[in-house]
Image (cartoon, rainbow, N blue to C red; front, side):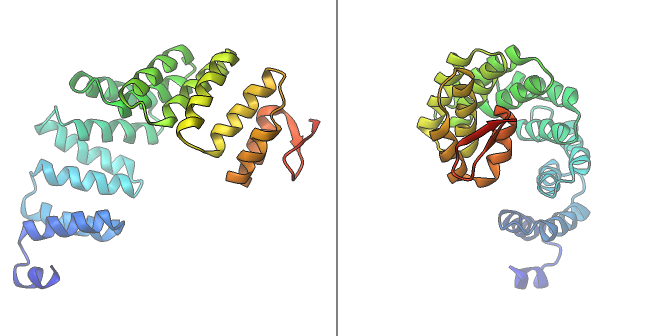
Length: 234
């Protein structure tokens, strides 16, 4: 491909292919350089502004990504990938209400997208609207039933709402589809609230991720021994 660029340095097709290959390889700064060279040749290409936005998002340059996405959506307001990326950019910039508005715009075109419903649920949860969050996470699980993260999110909502039996039902469903330390940490917290022994769940969580010990101690307000036993209440 580099030979091709030497022979045809202004071939935007080759430059585009190179940018996307570098993006997939995680070489984002080099990918950004290639797509910038394309945009020097064809500056009004929404396709290439979208590629650049993806790369900038990967580099965590969310404000710059947003500027590129505005260019894409100016010419193609129904571009779902751009809408989703814009919502996540706003979210990562801490602009949750702007992210929510963008999610709602995207859902007008693609109401069955579980990623959008999950993000909407996350925004609602983090802004204190736990029942609305619960509804969105359930919709996400309907469209993507094999993704255990949706069931974890549902369980977390029920836990926050102090509906511990419902929380236990959904965290068990999450665990049946995937084993993650945070799943077991949440289950330990639910069992503790129900007056049951969470030792086994704590030990499994620690075996999956020892660093989660501090999180569990904060959730349960206890001190945990190196073996995963509850030593004492803080």
